[in-house]
Length: 226
Image (cartoon, rainbow, N blue to C red; front, side):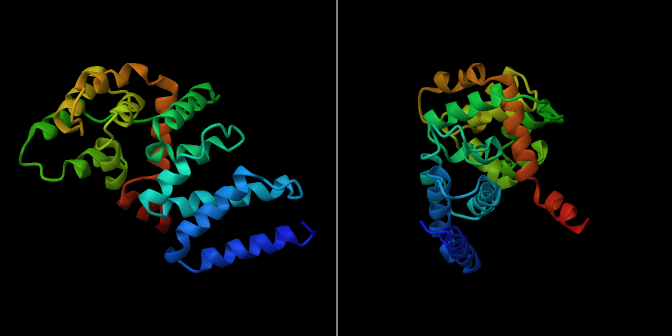
């Protein structure tokens, strides 16, 4: 590539970003291609803006596009942990395990997480009058309803185990929620065992990611107004 190639490619990516939602899938694909095969003639100083644009765009794209990209992330330890954490819920099992291990080995504190009242939450799960449990569930943990619904619909049970363990709920609370609201067609015992296979520090870090990047709508509006 010539000296103008990086500038031209960045201009092209910004043009795609400016074209709105209809070009999100294309933009995500091109950003991923760039990060996963970083050109030798590109400065490392250009990587953080590309990462930031991918993270923002991925949050705005459809589930299928996110899942396809998440499947490509395995084995790329050079990618920032904050970025790959955004794809945990969309990733296949092998990539999820890699994400968990990276979080477990990461230094620093995961941050404080306020545990919801387990008894109240389990009672709501049992109450047939609660029509939108995902919304009630998300509100209890402080995460967006869509993220809460994705976690509850994860058939492996691992995502629910991550959230419960990250928020310091015990195994009994996790098992009750999994049995009452989990999307398990068969092999329930294997799903319940997910709680024991999720590392504690990794669960806390991922839970913190969901709290920060996928908060309740009212919390996001409050932060935007400040």
